[in-house]
Length: 374
Image (cartoon, rainbow, N blue to C red):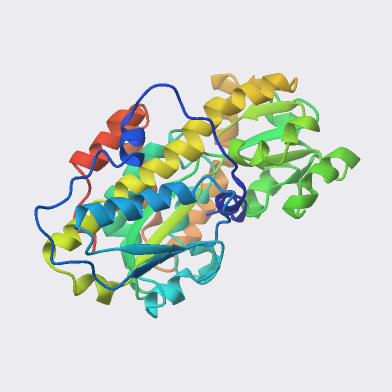
């Protein structure tokens, strides 16, 4: 997952609620969970840790997941949220969960160095579906074969990944075709360097608080990110062109303590695990789909031109960047990991899920979730 996308968990601000009811809203209101008849009483308080600050739009989603678990277990699994890095930082998730500091936490794979090559497949250009909720379902279906083993080697259990929308570009001059990238100075932390080389662009590493000024002063020409990053940082004030591309993906991975989970009774195990896939879906819809729908109004109010690449031009971008994916596959398979097979399965599942509605995908996660991953 890109560092730039990881940072969204810390900077996303409030997003207006959509007017219509939907299944994610029902989940966020606790309407999809029922309490068991009878309970043996609350257990010792459990810990869920994450590094996102209170201003982020993600913590309310996590808090609802904790509440849903508590409701579904009659209070037997009562988690307390430890946010803003008060218990674990962005780099501490695996160590903290493995060591029992937290039973459940965010576990950001890009901070673990080697060992998560397959889990990070969606960082490659155009591998992610355009629908981030489809990405969540694809991850769950492929996790047992490809991703769970990488988590287990770290001594933790795989929970879910809340996928962000694929990245787009905001720029000071319009980007309408591949050739418009040539020579640009582009901010995109975590973007594959091979992709930058293929684009003919210069990628610059500028801290997030300095991006606005960098664009304003000409130190950067464009920024690869997502709406939930562009809007809070007010990029629309200094870059008046938004080119929808859907370049690379990322998300928020979650893991939990294997020994703690194994000691639970089967009913509590089932109730806890039943919230994993819906949590990923809710994160994806609220940070990706809902936020982007509302962002459009902000762009138009700031005089931003919204550029949609014609299908034939977008296909050119895919063809230009396919060698980057091919090189990643070849390098990953040198270590014996089935990267080509993984890419093929993702492509097949895109056809199945990418055009499904948010309600349909959320309904799958509630009524027909992927089971027995750990």
